[in-house]
Image (cartoon, rainbow, N blue to C red):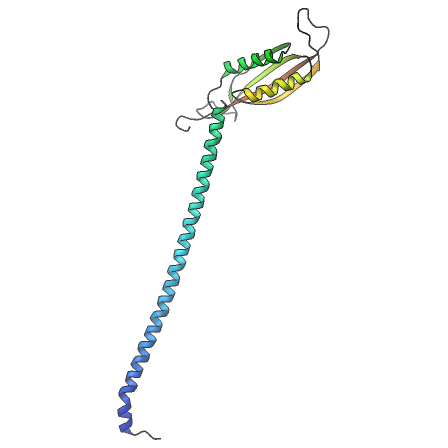
Length: 200
């Protein structure tokens, strides 16, 4: 089949329309592809933002839990009397009551000067140590263990026993003195925690 000029003139309009439609279809495909790429970028940006928000939320929850744990610990320290100023008079009363209730034959003690635990100057906050040297006359070693357990449980401080020496008493007991078989000498630290005003 051969096309004449007349046939070509008749086909010119449909061919032009077809070319225009192909051009429009190409433009639509390109626009759609661009929209797909833009949508993918927006989705990736939204996912990154969501991940960042979730990470911040997890971090905030962890910090909140840490604050709650610290507040709970501080409350426990306050309830135990460990947080706050040292209570030396209460400590001395506890020592005498423990001696009396455990019926220890003899006891001498001396608290040293309070110092900052980190070796720095005394300040509004931080851990403080009050050293205690104590000597006992005991009937048996169980008296010493009972005494130390009682002090550590009931003191309004965190009591750390640094050293204890236990030895038989030399010679005869003094007249009018309660019978004692052993002598003991211990060194302890009584720790307290101070917080600056406004921090609980």
